[in-house]
Image (cartoon, rainbow, N blue to C red; front, side, top):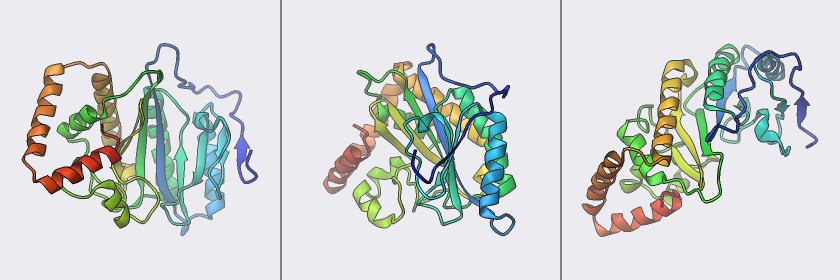
Length: 275
């Protein structure tokens, strides 16, 4: 264990469901909540302690707390983590949940958003990030391009106020900057696109966030479940007629652009992991 990380064991008599993924699950999920502690109202460290105590009431996972560094424990993805986020100012933190089921993500959202309301606030710096991946990874190459087009068609990628310095719409790669150019604009840590393929079977969703995002519980739950439905449809290759229509329409858009834009688009596609 790193010297700055404190570990708090799960409360053994907790009656909360663990929401662990099971042998029958096809997918696993994660979520990260960025927010600021309200230091005009609370002492920072005292607020962290109180948040930790309240987290223990609705999880069976151990909690890792590190206010200086990112925890490096081998099982960190199976713990709740309270940790710094380098894209935020000094009173900003991130809570990440353990690898869990779809129901588990909904459970944590419903319990963590009220903690943000009680102890902190969200602004244009802050975001809510989701991870979806297949449990099986051998031989899986998730069709991210189709997933991107489907999410765009359902208005999921543009339903929140733009946060251009933090998370640009991946659909804009044809019309704005390649990822390399975007990084020149973006000086803070993190990736630039609001939807990315991190591994062959793993995508991250960064479309949600901004001022008071934590007060939009119903919108967050609804959109998370829509993203999950899209992931399932793309992975299982259902509704092929709809998929073909999305690709055909985007191909028309791409083919109508000039040569320079097409060349930049090809670079951006590669950088974004869309291929």
